[in-house]
Image (tube, rainbow, N blue to C red):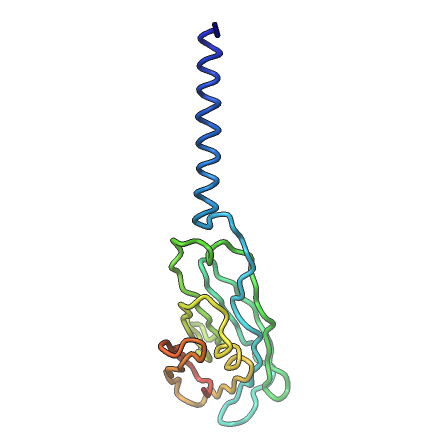
Length: 171
C-alpha cells in the first residue's frame, strides 16, 4: 500500500498536470499566446504643402496606437515629400477573441498640443488589411493652409462599412 505522502504527491501532480494542460488549451483556443504579424500601417507616401507650396525640412510624426503606441518620424525633402515604411508588429491581439481594441493611425506636425496639426487621423476597427486604406496612404497630399476636413470613405473590401478620416490631406 502506498504511503500517505506518496498518495498526496500523486494527487498534487495529477491536479497540476490537468490545470496546466487545460489552461494551455484555453489559452490557445482564445488566442492568448498565438502571436502573429500584424500590419499597423501600410507604407505612407505624402507631400506637405502650405498654400500649395511644398514645405521643406519639416518633421512629420506618425503615431500608431494598438494597445501600445508606436511613434516614428520623417522629414520632408526640399519639395515637401515625406514617407514612412510599413509598420508591422508581432501580437496576439487579432487572434484573441476578447480583443476589441481599434487601431488608431495619426500623422501630424508637432505644434505643442497633444494632437498637433492633424494631417491624417483614422480609427480602424476592421483588423484585416485594407486595399482602400493602403491606396489612400500611398498618395497623401496635405495642405496645412486648408481647414482639416472629415471624410467618410467607403471600404472597397466591405461596402457596408467606411473609414472616417479627419485631417488636412486631400481624400
